[in-house]
Every structure is written in C-alpha cells, then in structure tokens.
Length: 219
Image 1: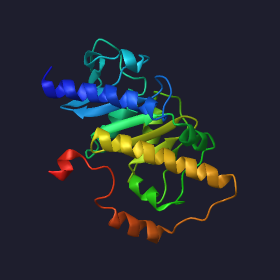
Image 2: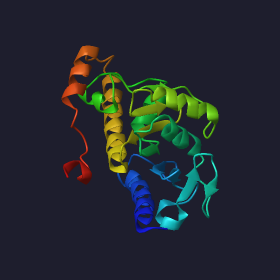
Image 3: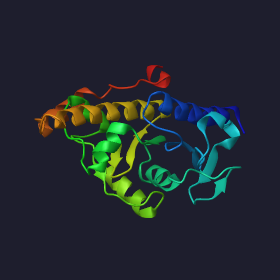
C-alpha cells in the first residue's frame, strides 16, 4: 500500500467520523467512497468508525471483485454505479441526516426555496423512488435522480452527495441537510414560494467558483 493510498483510506475514516460529529449521520448507517485506480475504496459494512484502520477500508474493482479483510458497505452498488456513470465524480458520501431523511420519507424533493439549491447542480434536489437497500434497483434509481445533479434524496432512506473530492462531497452533504431543514421549517407554515428556473440558472452561472475550495484549487 503506497503512502497516497494510505492517506486516501484514512481520509475515508476521517469523513465517516466527521459525518457523525456533524450530526448528519448516526451509528454506522452512512458510508463513504473514493475513486481509486481501476475501482474504488469504500468503508466496510457494520464496523464502528472509531475502530477502523486504513487496512479495513475495502477496495472494489469495476467488475465488483473485492480486495480487503472486511466486507464492503452494503450500499457498495450505488457507489460503484455512480462512479461508472459520472467520470467527474471522485467521491460519494451517503448518510441518513434527520431532515433529509424526513423529507425523503414523505417522498418529496427539495425545491428552489433558497438560491443555495444551485450548489447541487439544478433547481431542485430530486428524491429517488424507494427500493430495498443494496439492490440494483436502488442503484438505478439513485443514478437517475443524480442526472445533472450532485446530490439526491433516497425515498424512505437518506441522501447521497457527490464531489470531485471527498472534502467537496462532505461540504455538499452538510449544505443539502441545511436546505432540508429550511424546507422542513417552511412546510410547518405552508407551501413556500420558490425561485424561478431562470433565477437558479443565473445563480449557477455566478457560482462557477463558489463552494468548498480544495488546496489544489488554490494552487
């Protein structure tokens, strides 16, 4: 294992711990992956994040062959399929944040209640139809919901955020949960007014360099 790969594996562990510290996930229900060589690195299934070592992170090749001492997350399928469908995506974060999950239980998307919706790539954050966790059906639903988007909800389940880096995917996951909380609050009063498609397009153009800035971006 090279020093770079060790760093990537540790970054996945750190991200898992951060999800729980930020309150956007509970227990071991979330999972994190990174594109790596001819496949991906992904957090293992049913293992407390505090117990993880870099060697516990699982490598999975594009054909699904696993190399690791633990089994990959039960949600490995949609991680792998997202990477295959979206070559610009280098990191995937899946979690069960309270507000995102509440909205997803109701089968609702998050509409354009705030201009920050644009950070997810469009005028809404779609909700993928329900399918049993870990199935090809759920994966296909998630990939469709992510078309032209960087994040989506999963009905009766949780959310997915993607990014060109793990830091960006984590940043987006937090932003999506904030939007879900705002939408939930609006719904306690009534149906909120929405920004127009044209305005969101305008915001997207103005946000070309907005969001989490990696060190490499500043170089």
